[in-house]
Image (cartoon, rainbow, N blue to C red; front, top):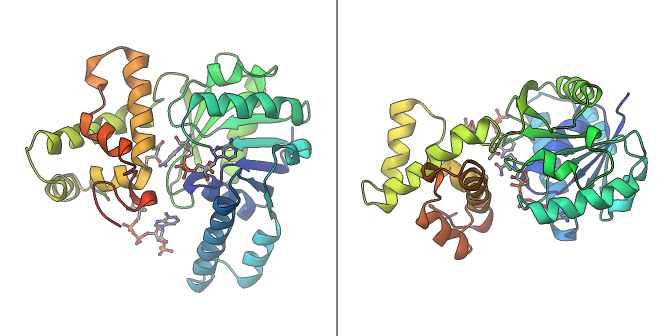
Length: 282
Ligand code: CAA
Ligand code: NAD
């Protein structure tokens, strides 16, 4: 099956990046968001990143114009009616994702593949809300999408080999490296990354060290490009908490208990960089 036309749902930090790399790789892209402001902000950010790439002489002015010409804004799911692939990147909430997949299933053509960029939610459960579980798959990009090379491809219980192969090929066309992963809580990336971030938050919560010093230890001591608390703010504290909840519930092991300080910040609306305040102020 050939993928030509793609809809990306959710124009936030992940959806915007996914739409950008798809359009740059030559796919026709519809970028959808239910929030018109978010859509506008997402498109403006893509334009800005492409302008920067021109400045740095990585792409030409005409590459930029061609890429933007392949990107169309959409505020209604029914615009997906001619798409070969939909990549969902809405909030990390099962009820919201299930609603989106249930609706999409009645809109997209029979051959279309439905992919989720979920960080941790079970692909098998998302797939069960559709009548095409064999054509549902996880396509987990890393943040920031235009920079990071990895895509975890997650097989749900019923994902077919044909669907897997189509998404593996697509990932390579986006110049990313695919890794095959089974459908387990947190997959691989977040099963390993999030407990580290959660532990960094506990370290601050228990008064062992300050936010800045915890980050310095991991940056200078382990050569991480960002300290864990800067990274948590960058990912979004709401997303970090949702992932920890999935690990805690999915494995039933107390080692995944989300730090109370993380819960408190999310309750306060301190969601990290995107809301202007998290462990740091922006
Ligand atoms: N979007 C697009 N491009 C971005 C960007 C963004 N948000 N942030 C930085 N970049 C680009 C910059 O434009 C720059 O490109 P140029 O060479 O064209 O200037 C390049 O990345 C390097 O940026 P900087 O020099 O400003 O800063 P840096 O060297 O510190 O790199 C970084 C920034 C790549 C984000 C780096 O700090 C890093 O790798 N951080 C860790 C990122 C990480 O761990 N990501 C995974 C998060 S977990 C996840 O995604 C899974 C999940 O489900 C939660
Ligand atoms: P975000 O909050 O930046 O963006 C989510 C967007 O989805 C918002 O613009 C919102 O308006 C839109 N939206 C919500 N419900 C919608 C609906 N029903 N229809 C259309 N649009 C809708 O979130 P994000 O950080 O981009 O995360 C999106 C997904 O990607 C989540 O599942 C998250 O777990 C996953 N993810 C996040 C990261 C990260 O570092 N932030 C990394 C990998 C994967």
